[in-house]
Amino acid sequence: MNSNELAPQVAARLKSALPGAISDSYSDGRGLVIRCEPAAIREVLAFLRDDRQCPFDLLANITAVDWSAWSRQDEQPDRPARFSVIYNLYSTSARARLFVEVFVETAAALPSATPVYASANWSEREVFDMFGLRFTGHPDLRRIYLSDDFAGHPLRKDFPRHGRQPQDHPQE
Amino acid sequence: MSEPVVKTQACYPRDVERAGELDLHSGRMVLNWGPSHPATHGTLRIIVELEGETIARCDTEIGYLHRGKEKLAEEWTYNKCVNIFERMNYCSTMINACAWHQACEKLFGITIPERAVYLRTILSEISRIADHMTCIGPNCVDIGALTPFWYTWDIREQAYDILEFVTGARMMHTFTRLGGMLADVPEGFAERTSRFLPEVLRVMNELDGLLAKNRIFCERTRGVGALTAEEALSYGWTGPCLRACGVAHDLRVARPYLAYKDLDFDVPVGEHGDTYDRIFVRIEECRQSVRIIEQALDNLPGGPVLVDEPHLVLPPKPVVYEQMEGLIHHFKLVIDGPQAPAGAMVYDASEGGNGELGFMVVSDGSGKPYRVAVRSPCFYIFSALPRLVVGSLLPDLSATLASLNIIAGELDK
Image (cartoon, rainbow over all chains, first blue to last red):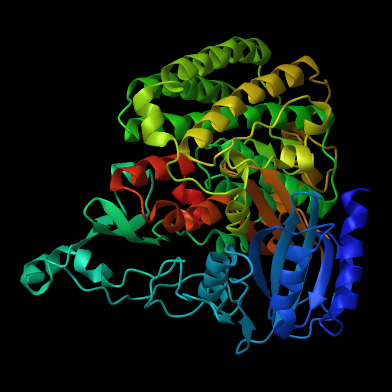
């Protein structure tokens, strides 16, 4: 059985195991994508990690997209909130890839995936730093690239691409 | 996960004046390492709390080389973006460039000519050898062995010489284009590369002889900075570091791209996931890269190196200079860039020098990406550093850090 068949089967098992957590599943240029309810994300990831036939043992990364500047009226898929947070999962034994996508608003806080995957720790810090999205239950939600006194979250679409920000660094 | 060392401020010189206020007799000492230090091999900062010479706590700080590449990419055309993404892992530039354009080609739905596929494979593998040499040599220096460094650096320079011969630039080649390569390789490329490959094998054997049973080397690296396969996967490790833990995961085999499905090579794995295994997995990978290059050179197909799609690639210069349409075409492609299909969203991953190098690209139909998300392997490998070094001796930190091959350009994006 090849990986193209395994991933949809996991999605089907997930749907029956956690009814209500999955709102949609479809394929696009990335591969198989499962759209999930924000509150259930940790259970969904734990289920996928512990699946017997196709364990997604690697959380490759977590990233987000800010859809607020999307200008294409003709290409307007169903996007229920401003940000989508995308979890990129890979199974080293089944050689299958799967994306889990959740939609959240600016003020929402997602349950942290750090108890499930250690790699979520820095990934979530990066998403927090770049998009300002919060994760509840994260052990250490600090900025990761930028300094603590940096104002704003650069990968939001309303953050200017050019500009200077005076920073209050104490002089030696 | 160890809690952060909070008194980072105490590391600045101005606090030394207040040293009298600090408790110097508690038995613990905070040591700051970096962001600019010869043994960090890049701009990153490590703060350790020591009990004697044993590391009690460890925290890291990154972002000193953060250039906002993902934000920059949102205002650059697809071809122009290669300039920023090949500067991520600056030790294996060609792999980065190929990975970026491969993701773009998936977005545009282009199949590149066979000759370009093989050339990208060969140049990527030469780049991989240079990358691994850049890791092993300084790693040996960090634990006091200077001799292997000269052997590895010789190979690295020879690899760069070939890449310079092909592209005109030693490190930042910018040789790939959307739809193929800028140009074909110059005459004499195959002969020159064929002369280089036995040199690589010879030096790998020298390294084996210098290191494999060297007692000092073994004592400094065996069991140092070890991680189990389960933990490595949980931390998101990929590449040689994960394979050193015994997981035979290599995207070139697991999800073949370029010409790798036609070529015969092995995936070396380690056993203990320690510094020793990480170094020897890299040495063995160089031998496998030689096998890949040999086969690819033997089977190198002829033909063009760039797709024949006028709306994607620049017209030939005589057309630009002599025909109005050619000139307009040239300007449109340079200023607006090739237009990607609207609403497309792709993820494409390649096996970089350090592991899975992935690009998620979202297009809104313009000539510039709406969003590019980069998955860089170093980021996840470095996140496990406190887990690797807490409880070990301070000198083990430099041995471990160098064997992870943390490249700040890739770590900080």
